[in-house]
Image 1 (cartoon, rainbow, N blue to C red):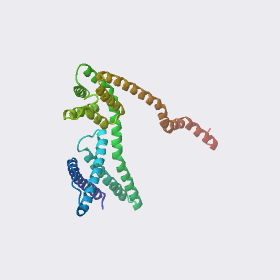
Image 2 (cartoon, rainbow, N blue to C red):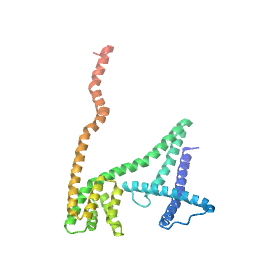
Image 3 (cartoon, rainbow, N blue to C red):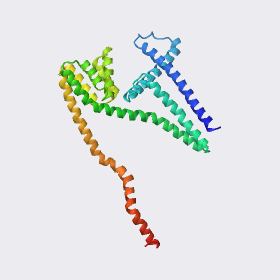
Image 4 (cartoon, rainbow, N blue to C red):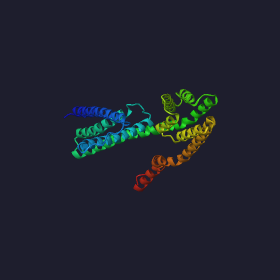
Length: 304
């Protein structure tokens, strides 16, 4: 079997498995929608012994569906924190992960077979490909989440300053959130996108406190959580929102400066690893290398 045919079979198998997974996912989503539609309906009468088998099957199906719903919600939350908040994001992520789990081990095994290696090397290559395929999606989501959270964390004080200006000018909080989202669309697009989602949720009837809590859950930023908690409590107690936002912005700037100073103190320690592993060996080689060569020649009697 040639390498081209083997690679074609690998990609064909990956496409087939991904298609079957998409079909299974659609069926699962319809089942979840059915369970959610029946969630608020009254309970059925207690089944008799004759219906015990059917009840057991329905109970198992409901439990399995509930577990699947929780897993879907957790995956959707992780992807939304990474910036992928579309409705098809979990489906796309699951399909990509499944394709990698199939294609990478198969491709590694085929490449090992083409290099005329034994079965042990093929199994090791397939295991390595499976491990890489397992780690790559999680690492990509984790890295993207950390970068997005850092961008949101840095943009919160600027957003609070603009919100203070809007509130003190007589604009309502909902209109101020919408105005800030428009102003930050180019400089801080992540936080602007989250503010637009909050405004849309409030417009469709969701309470403002719940929409702000959803904002904290979608981002996972601690600084934003403290601001939202303070803002909700101030609104309940009747405290001035403008003053609350101003104090929160100053506190966040102080915290950001302290965080920058902490990172600056960690810089010398982090520089020790590349200094010891890369810079010092090259420096010693340049300084001691000629002298060492001269000493060896003198000891061997071949030099001056």
